[in-house]
Length: 62
Image (tube, rainbow, N blue to C red; front, side, top):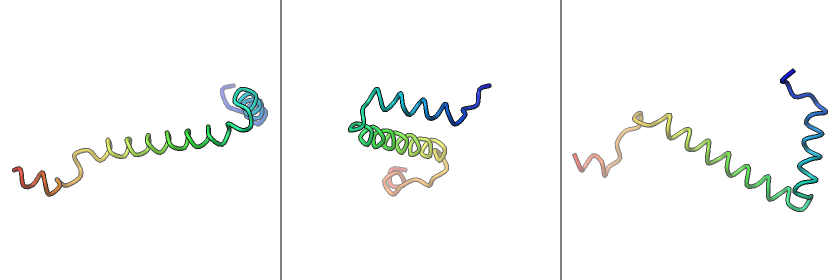
């Protein structure tokens, strides 16, 4: 019951088109892409926290 079917996606796309209009869709897609890229980078940095070697500045401070 919780799975999206093909017609659900079509209805969702029609609603988005009506809300934002055709000229705004490329701008909207671009901003969603940027947001996903930032989320991916932050997730990567959190998972690699503590695993990477200290930089040259950190090594000199010790």
